[in-house]
Every structure is written in C-alpha cells, then in structure tokens.
Amino acid sequence: MSHFIDHNYIENLIGENTNPSKEEILAVCEKASNMEGLTHSEVAKLLHVTDPELLKRIYKTAGQIKNKIYGNRVVMFAPLYISNHCVNTCSYCGFQNNNDMCRRRLTMEEIQTEVKILERMGHKRIALEAGEDPKNCPIEYVLESIDTIYNTSEAQGNIRRINVNIAATTVEDYKSFKTKALAHIYYSRKHTTNQHMKQII
Image (cartoon, rainbow, N blue to C red):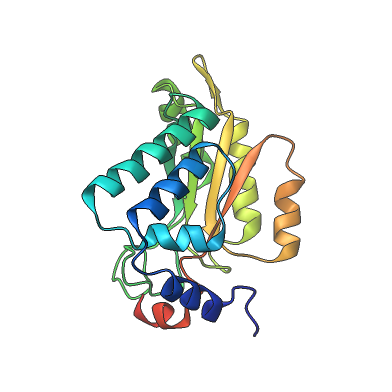
C-alpha cells in the first residue's frame, strides 16, 4: 500500500535544518506573526529549537496567532464515550484489545441519560468517543448515536455540535456523516503513518 506522506522527504527536511541561528528563528516567528504562512523548511527549523528564550518567543507567537484567528476564548467539549469495544492493541490506550475488562456499548436510552446530564451542566458541545470495532461498534451505531444526541434536550438547551472522534473508516462511511443535517466535525484518529512508530505503539 502506498502512502501519501513522503517520510524520506520529512526526515531529510528535518536533517537539513538542524542548528538554525537565532536570527533565522526570529525571522520565522515574525513571518508567522504576519499570518504569511510558513514553508516546510521553516517549520523544520522550529523543531530544533532548544534555547529557552527562543522557545518563549515561539509560544508567544503561537498564542498571538491563535488569538487573531479564534479570539481570547477557550472552547470546551464534554467527552461522551459510547463504546469501549476495540480490535487494536495501542500501548497507550485503556481500550486496547488485550486489556481484560468488561466490554460494552451504551444503549440509545443510556446515551440520552448521559446527554441530559451534560446539558444540565451547561454543555453545548460533545466529543463523541468510541474504540475501533466494526462488529460491535459499526458506523450505523455511531450514526444512530449522533441522531440520539441531537434529538435529546433539557430545559437548559441541547447539544449544538458533536466532534466525532473514531477510527479512520471508508469513503462511503464518510459520506454517511455528511448527510447528517446538523453540524458536526469528524476527527479521524491517525496517530502516525511512520511504520517504525506504528510498531512501537
């Protein structure tokens, strides 16, 4: 299977931009502050910074860019775990398949109960979470869960946005998300495309 990410290009780019000068880093920060966009080489230079003062400058620049785009606000998403079934063995994850634990998925009634609790707490946005298991947590179940969440309301209001955080899926599945009437965002979990790192995690 061919990959659309060129790992050799990335590794060479990082290797070619070691030991950037202070002037180079300040110039990159200035360019970023002006919202001009950075080249791959400029981003690679930033990855090599260890000087505390330059790191502060990078963080400050990042904060300024964030405020220009999003303003001085923090958006909160309440996580809602609908299923802990998973076929993977990712070493960092509590859902990994080789963990001896009770596996289940929430019923639609249980989802309604959880959503009402979150709405009473004032939440308007949900991060929908589920492990990867096509048999026990199929896309149809996820879509039904989305409908249930959007159709559940309390006196305080209802959920206005769902961030769907599940494993990468098929083109047809992605199209089924698009047909949903209410706004939501799909996050595809792809922790790494680096083959060496895949073996580690």
